Amino acid sequence: MFRNRLAKVYKHKSKLAKRQSVSCYRVYDHDLPEFPLCIEIYEDKIYLAEYLRRHGMTDEEHEIWLNDCLSVITEITGIPQEQMFVRQRKRMSHRGEDQYEKMDTKQEFFTVLENGLKFQVNLTDYLDTGLFLDHRITRQMVREQSKDKRVLNLFCYTGSFSVYAAAGGAATVTSVDLSKTYLAWAEDNMVINHFKDAAKYRFIHADVKQYLKTLEPNSFDLVIMDPPTFSNSKRMKDFLDIQRDHVELLNDVLAATTPEGIIYFSTNFTRFVLEPEKIHASEIKDITKATTPFDFEGKLKRWCYRGRK
Image 1 (cartoon, rainbow, N blue to C red):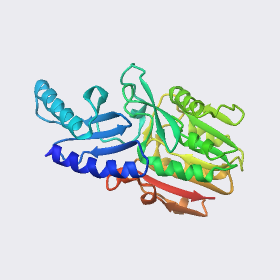
Image 2: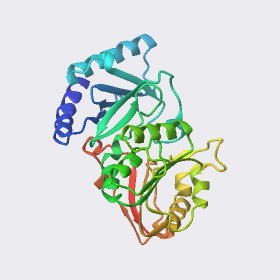
Image 3: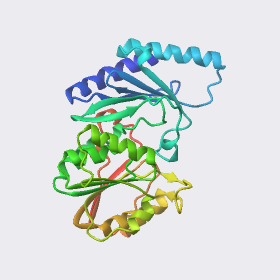
């Protein structure tokens, strides 16, 4: 059953990936309830996450089952098991505080290409790899709109949007995150793409909710905000709940943008409800469908919006 399903989706998605020159993409995501796996290809490597559930197997039975799954994956994709990185996820992923959870200390980074840009991914140490594949199209949109713009990347994680903005010719790019680890990773991603000018590319260690209150009006032309669903980090003054806080966050961003300034806002909270009547934007458009890549069709667990001041 698993072999048949994987063979079918791999044949379809690998063709589309080749046609679009995409080398990092998701192949399978919990398609069959009996096989709660997420399988992503990162060029010549595989990242495999098993969603934990009550499977009723002993540790020994589970190990045999998992090894059988790995054998099938090798058979279908041609990628050997020593090039596979297996993680276990406690629940279906919605990017929250758990993305910051350190799982290991191997520090194995690999460089992959996306749209001609380089990104460092880590398939061993963290719950997430460092490159959110579902935002591939959104990143390209940002690149196309960044020419001569002052760009702000909030909750920047490993800075992939910052790299795209710089590649699009942004006048300045400011990346803000609460994690020093991810800010350093973001800086590395910028450097390997030869974006090294400290006057143009700034990295700010801050609580975004507090940072936004310090900004002058008309500070930025283009803002990207992809916050966690929930965060109660000890380093924050107040906890973050994206359903509760999205109106305040977006209004603070709008206050700091120029007239006609553009905001890209996304959230992985599946039950999220936008409250547009409370947001001080001239327009706010749901672009979730338009930003869904081929490998996430019918499986996307996030919302994406483009707003204008």
